[in-house]
Length: 218
Image 1 (cartoon, rainbow, N blue to C red):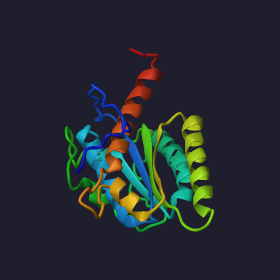
Image 2: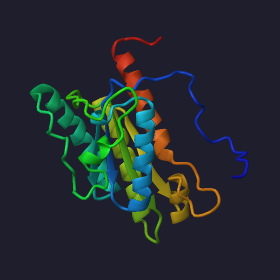
Image 3: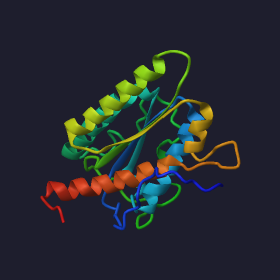
């Protein structure tokens, strides 16, 4: 891998965030599934590194990226229903659209740090939602319309609900760019899996929101 002389990239934080009390949702599209699968795995890897329990990670799928905003909105609402009705399986085990490569059982094969795969799932509302999709430019305006609509709608969901919605939608010009951003590039440089960044961002933002709700800005 060559030296990257660009200035892009997030500055690592010195704060060690504890994800063990958090409940996180991942909702992903199924278009471009090879890239999607890698991004979801990268996201899960990072969430577990921060201590988020497998039992507190809910994964759902939808057909494409255009459906992500509605799914995020309804999942947040559904998690509040769980919290008030004490019904643990309203979201657990469901799969919007069917066919998710990450069914309920697959999330419990590797226990999260500081937790157990058999830990009872939380009924608390989601602390953050990670929306994952892959949009690759084609020969029509479809790409621009979807990118703009999804970006604005996901922002509106988090502003309307107060729940962080992490923007995990790749908007790339060609297939290879998507593969590199999922860490599975075809060349010598496989790239970096951006799902890891999204997992870290979810834990950090969820932790901030919990503090800020209590008026704690230290």
